[in-house]
Image (cartoon, rainbow, N blue to C red; front, side, top):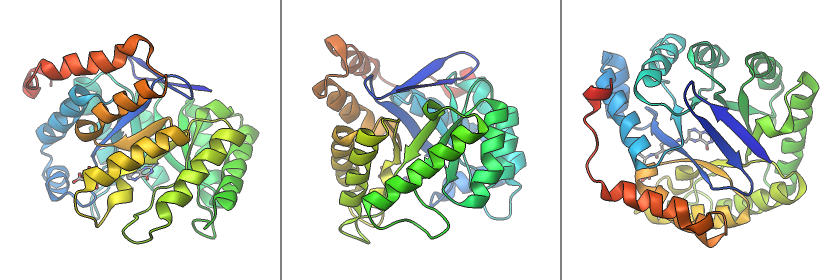
Length: 290
Ligand code: THG
């Protein structure tokens, strides 16, 4: 299956047989004081810098989350989407629990963006799927419903089937739905990683759709998070993961290497291209681009 996102300048195809897609996670104030402060004070240079740095590190898409308690999220979402549009040329992933903020992001984003996210919860399906359809966007479906996150892989797959069915019903084709089996912290529950990996395998085999994870979630609360994130990424890629919201500076080299080992990078073109890009050295001065 191929899912194609567009900015106003670029197409990015997420695919079950092509190379892996990296969604940069850094524009997100959750647990990052500096980012929250930047959003509060309107210091958008910091956000531009995070955006350009992630693109240079290998991001194919940028996640945009601007949720800070007390701030006007829909207005900030539109503003940040607008400024990102001016300094990077890749598609965006609008990340918010608020349908109003997602709607504001959709109105400001060019092309065919990614909406992050719906779930199997009735209210979210009813509110968001028509918006996604109307705007011709792609949507991420989280594997949880009104009862919470199912404990077993089988039960999570049932939520995926429900989301795909409901999307089809409003006219969104299956290739425009990306399933997210939810990565939970293995620090809190030692079986959480395995349940997510088995869910990825089942979805890949039975539904064949594109699959995304917020891969840094797995390492919450643990030391040397990069070690856990790296191991998880490689296992998840073998299981059928096609796309991840993660830190491109830390993960892109490993992802390119795993793509090569999984036969998804002919002539090692992407692997070598990424290596050359890194050799070019320090980042372009962000203000030149802004
Ligand atoms: N699924 C979907 N969307 C999501 C998530 C998901 N959006 C939010 C979140 N989960 C993914 N984004 C992040 C962003 C930052 C971090 C974790 C998840 C994070 N970052 C550390 C930091 O910035 O300091 C660094 C982590 C590291 O050491 O690499 O913790 O699951 N659809």
